[in-house]
Image (cartoon, rainbow, N blue to C red):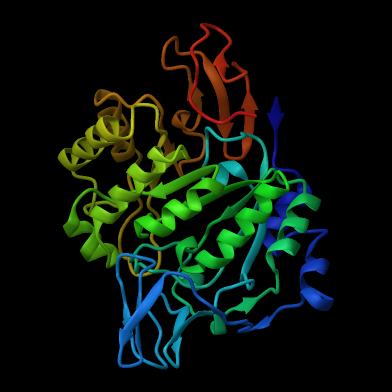
Amino acid sequence: MRWFTPLWLTVALAVGLLGVTGLVTSGSDGGAQGYTEPRVALYWEDAGGGMVRCTLCPRRCVVPPGARGHCGVRENRGGTYYTLSYGNPCAVHVDPIEKKPFYHFLPTTSSFSIAVAGCNLDCKFCQNWHISQRRPEETYNYRLPPERLVDLAVQSGSRSIAYTYSEPTIFYEYMLDCAREARRRGVRNVYHSNGFINELPLRELCPYLDAANVDLKGFTEEYYSGMTGGSLAPVLRSLRILVEEGVHLELTTLVVPGRNDDPDDLRAMCRWIVDTLGDSVPLHFSRFHPQYQLTGLAPTPPATLELARRIAAEEGLRFVYIGNVPGHEANSTRCPSCGEMLIHRIGYDVDIRGLEAGACTACGEVIEGIWE
């Protein structure tokens, strides 16, 4: 099977969903600058004195009346915590599933992708900072309740809905309701997350998640603190939970020159993945390009990514990819047993060659993933 990014999808990526945009932005589905529809949030508790404590993510923000948590989308109104990120995505696109990136989940299919403004981390290298570091009142937002969103996903021919671009945790209530509705109607759910979420909300979400790609941004607390404003330990816990709950998992590490490319740290990370998550978890080493607060750095040398990939292979990882380097051989999937080309990729030109019913056609090796 060979799949190219079709013209309608190319235009959709640029303008926001060709053929469906009118349905999104007209009539009752119309959006507006700063559109919000506040709803009582999940996962918070009374902290006394009119203050609330958010229990959604590890920050556990204590928020006084009239203020918001770190993410900028959850607000204390008179001692009740509200989410301002329900039903109001600021980004609506149809993407190739490979863009998330997912390489072992329904290859060649499209994914209806949404995001709401805000994030619970402050990554200096963020590629979507124009929405992740904004509040909902600062973006143009569509009015898309869960039922309508799933309608549009089905109409677009997408096999899945992706919660992506910004951090899905901060629009948790909206994501959860969309995921439930999608599951009811036979549409898969995937999310690309930083993994910075508490255990209880993550476990509540997992029964409705088919796949997760989590950014494992580095492997030291120092890196997480200095480059993201977060911490590593909660992310590692989230990865263990996703595996325990049976969610298909892929990992992405953006390799930033001079920041998280130390070979010893990369080796420790890969060893932890094998020992804790298994040797078949796909790992994507992604090339850094100057973004946001790190415009003074040079892009990651391909040789650095290739070294990281060799280290991962030496530690026993079976599927290691290099991203953001168009045409690199490590974008493709080969059988780890016999070397047969299974899925050939050049950008979003995807050719399934040697994979049938989840197994290598040359040697019969079963390849971990969700293929149908």
